[in-house]
Image (tube, rainbow, N blue to C red):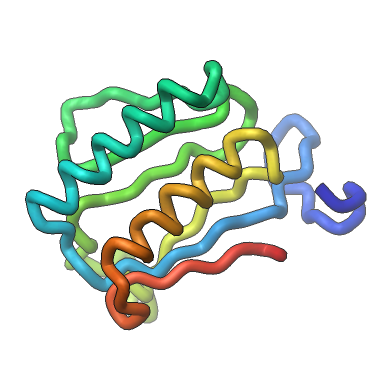
Length: 130
């Protein structure tokens, strides 16, 4: 990461977490796409040498993993949200702050994988703090 002065202080233990990956998801993943994503995450976990922890929960419509450090959990939803929490909310907008820690490359990999699979920037687009 850049020097600590570049990032705003946002967590409660004094760590800088400004580096962020962004994505706009204006699509629901179909069965084939979702299975492909789940298989990719299994592969990522196998090769990560313990860098990522895939979180298991009761929601089969969510892929979630973290980097075992004080950063945000990456969450990818199968279905785009349909209910706004506030009036101006962009339901397609998502982000994950990683501080460029080792799990960041896995977050970015999965986003690039999704973007390549969808191959339509109106449906799925990505960016990051670079």
